[in-house]
Amino acid sequence: MRSSLLAYVTVGCVAAGLALAAAGQKTTRLSEGRGGSPHDRTEWTIDGANISIEYGRPFVKGRTIFGGLENYGKVWRTGADEATTLTIDKALVFGGVTVPPGKYTLWTWIDDKGPWKLIVSKETGQWGTAYKEAQDLGRADMKTDPLQAPVEQLTIAIDDMPTGGVLRIDWDKTRASIPFTVK
Image (cartoon, rainbow, N blue to C red):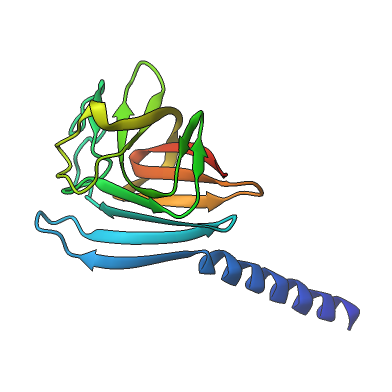
């Protein structure tokens, strides 16, 4: 009887924890995209900060992505079509880059010889190939890891951590990630 009660309490706590974790993220389909890449808005609340990312979500479709479709040694639009947009209501700190509340675009420097870099740009509303380095708010090193299984559709997500979170970009066989704190 006691072990059955403990099992029910344990299952109930796990289910409640999963429900709370799922409640921390909301994804909304914005459009199917003109070029075949759906556009989504995904939202989180991390340490009281509301974070929204809007991006085009291309598919691998049998292509080699990094080092193929997206050459190394260049800035990548971090999505498809329009530039990926980050909107925040509290300051976030990525590496040594403090991003004040507001709206920004996210870009990624991809490299096979050194760390990738998250690029936060002050310019918004541009097409994803219209990157202007002069508009950089800052750049911070990202960690890259091979994924256990390939990810067919580009996915940007945030993992909630005890302090702050980790921004993850998963596509094909690669995960690029960077921790951040809320200021």
